[in-house]
Amino acid sequence: MDGTFRPSAYFPDRGAGYFTIRNDDSVDHLLKGISSPLCQNVVAHHTNQQQTDGANDLFTHLALPHDSTMIFPRSGYHMMCMGIRQMPARGSKVPFTFDILNGGSITVSFTVTDPDELTHD
Image (cartoon, rainbow, N blue to C red; front, side, top):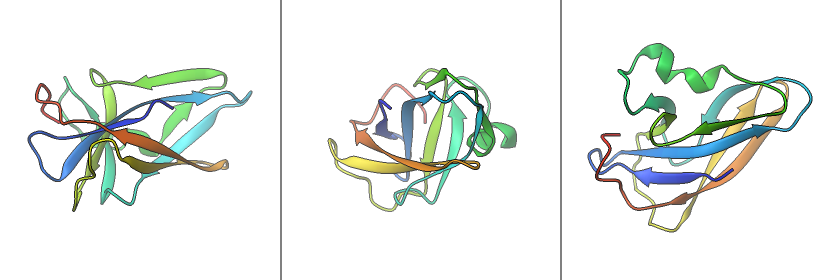
């Protein structure tokens, strides 16, 4: 929920996604991937930390505890959409699909905002 997508002001083929994910279920789940037709691949990124392979792969094995909410903001871990061929227009919607192990998938529309001149995503 609350998904926004912000094109990078520094890299024309990248953008960042910020969102909140909720597990209202009574059991834990495992996020096994995020994809979008916009992106060649989706990786995790933290604004203030050095990138590592482990950090990049966060969304391929993220535990979603039961009855919990996790926030992925600009100032913390969030997703990076890599390999964009054509940047979507401001105000448009971009679909991102969240694949859950043994739970199917959920597709959510992210609203495209203006590039953020203050980050280095």
